[in-house]
Length: 196
Image 1 (cartoon, rainbow, N blue to C red):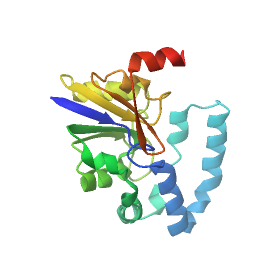
Image 2 (cartoon, one colour):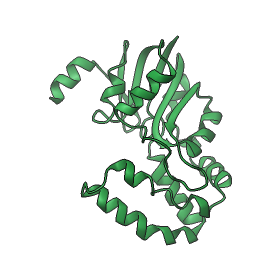
Image 3 (cartoon, one colour):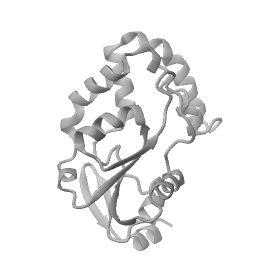
Image 4 (tube, one colour):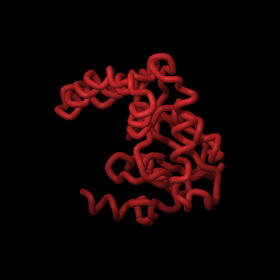
């Protein structure tokens, strides 16, 4: 099977969907502000590298039990679906979306945009906590290989040269760095030789 891999945040859409969803919930369900002090403390601990990013993400969606989740997710995508980058609609092959964003948030837009496959960070829908590892960096490749052991990756699209080097390395065709919604093709070997 030949497929293309896409990151989601700042790639297919020009924003970080998890952060924007948290803001959306804060505006539409203002009582979630009671979670903000705890989230901010954990964010500071992550910035100071006292805890890792996955530990932070285990609590950053702790507001989920306080909102009508399905309604909130639909309302969020009703507002932001139109911001999907137009080039995504012209895809040539089956696509696998691999993202660190929560499954409860991306499954709705996956249906709307007809993703062929979605791999993302799993969360407990009752507590908002991560189940397993954050789908980021090498974990993206591990999960991809687990699900598609015999797939041939042609093109890879992402906004992050730093974090998505592992998935870019899978491309047998073209790598695309997404910058402000625009596609910038590059050669993997040349680009990462420059970065070293």
